[in-house]
Length: 474
RNA sequence: CGGGCGGUAGCGCAGCUUGGUUAGCGCACUAGACUGGGGGUCUAGAGGCCGCGGGUUCGAAUCCCGCCCGCCCGACCA
Image 1 (tube, rainbow, N blue to C red):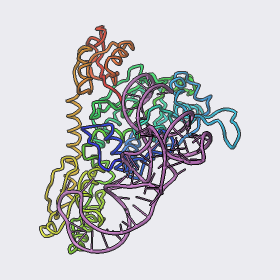
Image 2: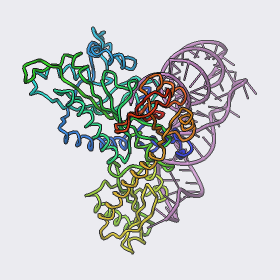
Image 3: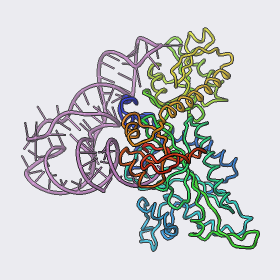
Image 4: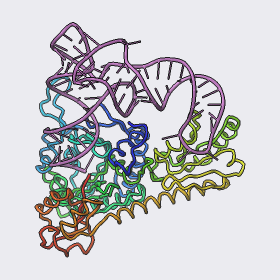
């Protein structure tokens, strides 16, 4: 960990690792690819959890917890599923000093174990829909790892639902996609493009996968969340049937959907700058930091004023007071900027005299003098402004870095310069997708839902194609 | 998993080529004093399985082998 932060504008990759560690979001664990989420990073995750969980409950979902270990035979029941995940599964082969009769997978995702249980629980159309979510940890033996963005173990939530009809399941997958989109844009101030995944990027075992893709400031796309319409693939593999009103037995229609701690990485890269993290107020672990500006003769009076100010604000905001005497104000300013605290309030002898505080926005570094009288209202307004302008800025960046392209030469040019999203048309042939990847490293991120998506010529072969967004993926 | 680079005090590094004093530097840390509105100054101090294991040698941070971990570039993935 360096003493000073690498400039984001100079080396985004290095900046990312530095800032995650210097801000104490996470640290490396002794096992390859594993990380410790430190208290400041976990506080962020808890805020994300709270805001998402509320939305899940509001859409009728309930939480449960399924086991970490999955018998190998369960994983093998759905052919595509096992094929997709086999390379990255960790296995338990011994327990209590004895070799197990059947080895157990440490879950790479929980479809198998949950479907097994659903087969036991579902008997009648009256049992449907089943709308269960779980907050859990997952192990996937990834070859290349990055803090938060791709780790061997990660935290996530996975929703698993079962429905009576195909239409209901599809509706659920799209509904949760919208829940995610609204969450990311409202709370994380992170604009995304949404749409359907190409077959090559589809979840192993799904009939359709939908995704939300955010654009990082180095022009690469980050998949921030996915929802899957599983059709009846798992229902048939796990024999999840119900007796319908018409007295015939039918397989259920299912969905699954998830977002992970990877979003923290997306948040860091979307908003951070050369000075460090910038957190949107709505999810920032600390929204306001109060820094006293004092000297030997003013320590008592300024300390008391800072304490009183923090106390006033604490009932409505997440407030930290930095009373450490071993650091000077300038040092503290840099530290809290690096940690991404959205708003800093400075109070010193001059401010006490004038009945004001000095407020400094993290996103713009703008300095404002605000009267103490109705500080709560002023601060609330400021935090809302910060949230709003962070989103606007990110949205502008997304728009400015989304390019219409009509041929491979244009794609190559974009990828050699700014990168970003490339809006074009694609015939849905995997060979054409591969050709783009070979030439530019970009892949199909999503095919948007927009109505005009049908008419256009494939960027590679010129045959009729649908609208698609290409980008280099994280 | 292939190619490259790295691991020495909490962090960043030097020392390794050519084996041999007590393993060094900067920052951070501790104590005290001065200081305090954008990363302060001085004085004193503490801190080391030199990544792990083996080998060569009278002697290994240094040479050899194996392993672990990290970073970058490729193939695979949330």
